[in-house]
View 1 (cartoon, one colour):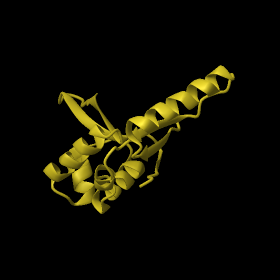
View 2 (view 1 turned 90 degrees about the vertical axis):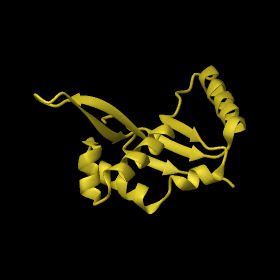
View 3 (view 1 turned 90 degrees about the horizontal axis):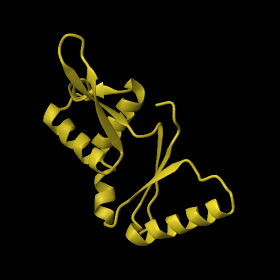
View 4 (view 1 turned 135 degrees about the vertical axis):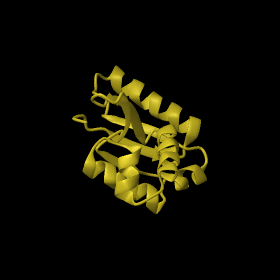
Length: 127
């Protein structure tokens, strides 16, 4: 993860998307560089709040410290059930906070590893 990406999570939905797209187009027309950020928008604040649980925060902290790891290793580090961690990873991946990829596991096929989408994630919400 050499790239630094700012991830902003908000709940502005489609209106916010078009507002940001218009602002980006205007900046490009002026010859300005776009900010290195990715926006994940939640239309429903309860979806955003589901991403803010203590267990999900521990999961993100663990990934930041350990780097890309398998769900099994992550569950062991967190002292949690593998299925619960897998559910959290799946939900966070669905919302764009985590990504997964398969890596070769010498002589044992492939292993799915989990990693955050950015080194730093900034959460913002307007309710």
